[in-house]
Amino acid sequence: MSTALETALAYHEAWKSRDLDRAMSYIADDIVCDAPAGRLEGADAYRGFLTPFVGMLRSATMLAAFGDDDRALVMYDAETVPVPSAPGAELVTVREGRIVHSRFLFDRAPFEAARRQG
Image (cartoon, rainbow, N blue to C red; front, side, top):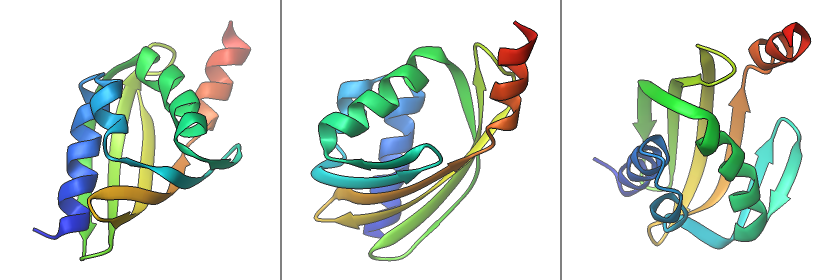
């Protein structure tokens, strides 16, 4: 298994287990995250982004994971309090065992439908 993939899977397992501190141990201080809501820069901003998600997470099922020495792609389906199925994917760049860049994608439609319903 590649270094990037090992890091991405360890990070995934940490947030999936709702262990935010352990998840953040895989995040570089100067991470850049491109997410649907816009760009986040720095570990503090990333923690602020991840905290609400971890708080509403019930479970996550790994769908696929691939990687090389520098980058890994992880796709999963998350069950959250507001929606039973929230597919997501992260393409991460890893340097020295820490994620320095994340391109995070998820389907916002289920969350928007849940908000409209109440």
